[in-house]
Amino acid sequence: MEKEHVALAITGMTCGHCVAAVKKALAAVPGVGEVEVTLSPPRAVVSCDPSRTTVEMLTKATAEEGYPSSPTAR
Image (cartoon, rainbow, N blue to C red):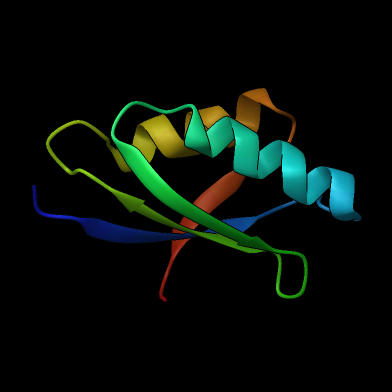
């Protein structure tokens, strides 16, 4: 399986709980492997299977958790 890395800029994270919530939401998306979320800068880097995961699925997962996101350069 070929992995793709997607970087997302996350809006609204202010603490460790926010980081944990975003990480959990992203990890639950089908096809996602590793997830790294940082508060400063507020972003996530997701390793995923591009045949099972789309950027739209990732941004929807963070938005549903209350933290809108958008793709960004790594």
